[in-house]
Image (cartoon, rainbow, N blue to C red; front, side, top):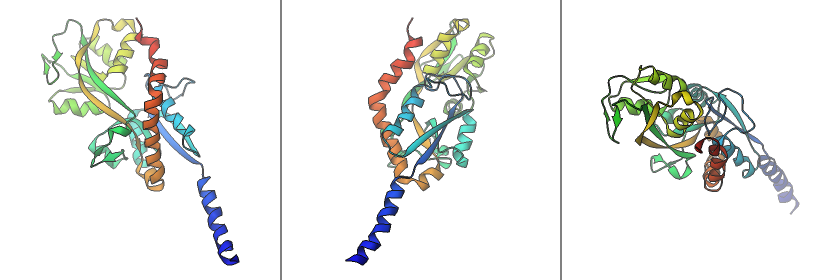
Length: 263
């Protein structure tokens, strides 16, 4: 009986140590000021935004997981995910070509929206008196480019519709281009576009066109390197995030949106 016991103890000890391993999950996100990630810099404020808080809460439900954040331009976030310098990025809409730089939760060959971080829409913004319009399927009266954020998925969507696109780095830049008559419209994430208009009264000549151009699901995309090393933990992170979205999203949205949605 003694030999089996002596043999089992090292295995048990290894199991305990393995279970106690602290895993750091490095998440990169964009350095733009939105309700999802507040502040327009690389600094992370005390009230960091809806998505940042939601993702940070994963720590409370997954033992030995520690989440660290960094901020940078979106194209750099994508590059760091591909190189493995970042373990995860948000918010990444599903694009087939992005599968080569990281993984999404998948089911039957498609992104599994039950594990999404959020669902967002893109809307067209234009001058109040401009003739340009969007009817839900096509644009009318376009004479110049439509602006869109550099590296965002909407750029390819617009180009597939035959629309000429000017890529910009800030919402404010696009709205100023609109006011100067240099573009016909700006295709931006709706809540970000609304937020930018609300906080700057100089943009009061700009309006949002309905319906939205497109509605997309957004994910916490994870690097191939992290998934290869922690396949079960990767799935646990997505599952936990989905649970938190159900229980905490409304509270966090009210916390960050009430400041600028009221008239």
